Amino acid sequence: MNPLNLLDVVLAQRGDDAAAAGILAAMAGLWLVFALIGLASVAFFLFCWWRIFEKAGFAGAFAFLFLVPGFGPLIVVLLLAFGEWPALKQRA
Image (cartoon, rainbow, N blue to C red):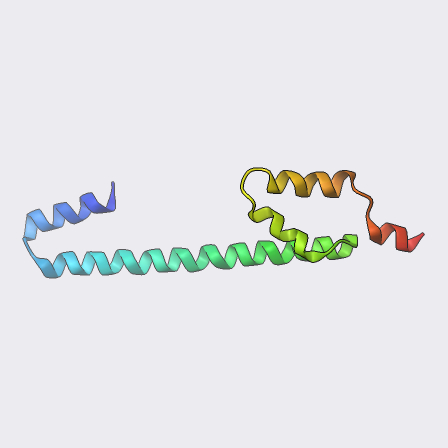
């Protein structure tokens, strides 16, 4: 059910502006929580990939390639799969 349909149902049943304001406030709060969880997830994901790149000997900033839509993750996989790892060169 679409949240706007829920708002229409409540307004039709009660005809009350306070009910509509309450529902809109609840939806806004829920979207804020979802946005914060999403941003925290993206930040953790980028942090993990930053550490992976650093351990492989690359610049950690390569983790931001994941933010490029479409080809970003493909470039990262190809770089890690077929690229020469500087960390392995240092060990030899």
